[in-house]
Amino acid sequence: MMPRKRKLIAVLLAALVPGAGHLYLGLFQKGVAFLYASLLDVFLLLYFSSMVMDINVPLLIFLGVINPVLYFYNVYDALQSTDQMNRGNIKKNKLKPLTFGLLLVVGAIILIALYRKPKWLDGWVEQAGVYAVSVIFMAIAGFLVITAIRSRTNKVRIGRYTSSILWFGIGVLLLVDKWRDLDYMQLLLKWWPFIFVVGAMEYIVMHMIYRQPSGKRTMRFNFDIRNILLSVFIAASVFVIAEQELYMHLWNRVSLNLAAAAADFSEESGTRVDKPMITVPIEKNADKLVIDNVNGSVTVRKGAVQEVLVQTTIWVDEIARGEALGIAEQSTVEVGSNKAITISTHGQTYGKTGKRHPRMNLYITIPEYSNLNVDIRTTNGNMIMEHVRAASNIHLETGNGKIKLYHVIGDVTAKTLNGDVYFDGVYGDVNAETKRGSFEASNINGKIALSTLVGNISLVSSNGDIQVHTKNGNIFVDDAKSKLDAESLNGTIEIRTHAVGGDWSVYSAVGEMNLYLPEAGSYRVDGTATYGDITTNLPLTTEHKRLSGKIGNGDYLIQVEGNSDLHVWKY
Image (cartoon, rainbow, N blue to C red; front, side, top):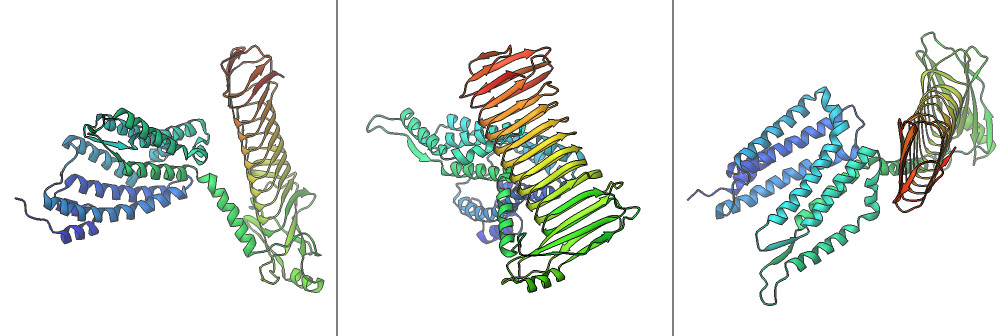
């Protein structure tokens, strides 16, 4: 007879080192598993918080929560296992030695890779990490199904097949979203109640399969609560981690509203004061123009000047003129000239709460010969740039306001939470984003990527690759010359071109799709309209909601996918 194990010792050891309590009890596999799981979680947390890729905040929070959960469960399980051990009804090792040894080797290799951080690991995680997770989820689904089928007990666990379907579905959605750069994972927001239908169906089917004659019932039906809750928790966690951008914009909007509540902004009304002109010399090594404004528009133009000229117009509303003139007098603009020319506003707050900012509109003229990179930020106000030439890049960011660029040179990065964006004549690549606003762009001599959650996108004449995405809005592209990626979850898509010069990917979940393609060229078409009609006057084949065919040699692929009508016409 084995000596009894003491609960106090097992719990103390488990509290000191995860898994140590189980090793004391002789549960080698479980003890090492707790130790490995704790180390793996810590190493993953350190790795993802320090890697070069964009930080996924929900993933870090998830990993941070897992460790204390593992720790306390390890202590709890050590306590429970002590009682089971003393009663003699616990199985020490559940896995075969060879299987467990292989798992230890794999776990050790993963820990070493996370600790050493080889260069190839970042690329693998970024490119193949989602694929690996998808395969693991689908493998878990298969394992659940196999164990349910091979079970030889007199218990039928209702929910195991439902759990496997959920695991498999999450894996497929992750795989498709990564492969096609889509957002099918967001369908869970609309269709999550369907899991109850699947569970009810499983309940009915299991009772029909294992139904026994009256009085001879031998099978017992139990709900597999553990697997159901685990699968739902994992599904919710994966959704939160994978769809960070979906709800982070909501937080941005809430933050903007909180900022607006904490700091009121004067409108362009009331008392107007034009500040004296400020001149800023340009040093020989100057290569950047940095503008920081709180409340007000920023306009940057080129002119026949030798220095940077800063004109400030201040508006103070809701108070008497005499008091407003005092607020305007105390509001200043600070400038600096070195390697970076800096211009920043400091408005004197006022009002009943003392948090209302005067509106300070900046009109900045830079020399025609200059080629400064530009970085402009404002919390509330429009941004306008005309005839500006940057050495390499232009960065614009506003919390609430429109962005307008006319005839500029340089790669442009632009972002606004709430406002429309206009581009006309940009010589360089464009990457722009708005949460609630539309795009109007034309004459872009470079790659262009436009993204909005709620708004239309109109693009005319772009020489580079095109990427246009909107969650709720229409898309119009004219004169698409190169590679094209267009996606709208709720809106119509119309694309026109005289010549196909790259592969196309067009997707509309809800909305009609109209493509105008050249009669001569070298491309092939593969299109589907799941619930709509397909019409074309090009020599293409239509059969079973599918459009296919080849023009010329078929060098480029035009892939179209949607649920509404698809029309492909000669252009």
